[in-house]
Length: 81
Image 1 (tube, rainbow, N blue to C red):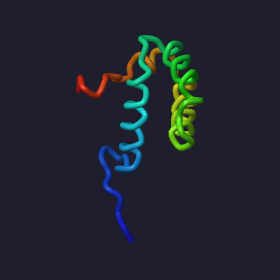
Image 2: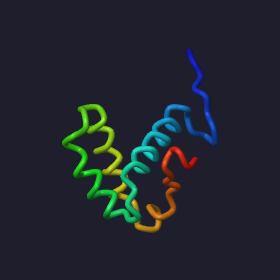
Image 3: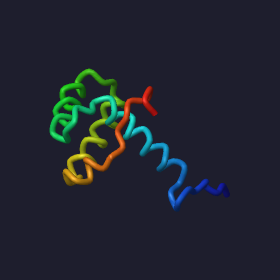
C-alpha cells in the first residue's frame, strides 16, 4: 500500500491539479472573472480533447466562485513567478 505525500492536508495530486488550474487561468487572465470566462470559452474549440475537458472543469469551478474569491486568486504569468 502506498502513502500519498500530503502538504497542509492536501495530496500531491490535488496540489498538482491546483497548480495546473492556476496556470491555465493565468494564460487567459484579462483582469476580470467575466473576461477570463469569455476568453477561455472562445479558446475551448481550439483545444485538444483532454485539455478541453480540463479547461471546461476549470471554468465550472470559476463559475462557482464569487467575485471576491476570484479576485483573491494569485494569477501570474509563469515568467513572472
